[in-house]
Length: 85
Image (cartoon, rainbow, N blue to C red):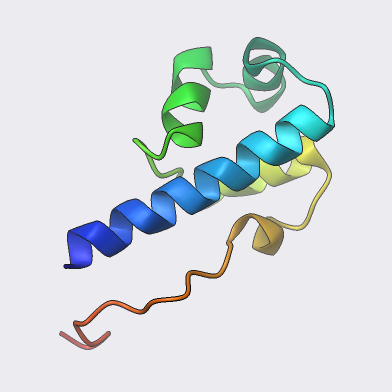
């Protein structure tokens, strides 16, 4: 169950990054250059195949001119496992 939740979170964050990138009319290649990463990594993030680490999330937010917290979207369901386990 937790893996499903992790995938759901990665996809939601990726969709938000893609939405904001497209609103700014940046191609994946242009965006990748500005963030300092490879275009394929941008694609992985946007498809929910990779989850950016916190420092990368801050760089992405800086390029998109948003607060990092705006990239962390709410997911309706919570995982079954407790935080302390």
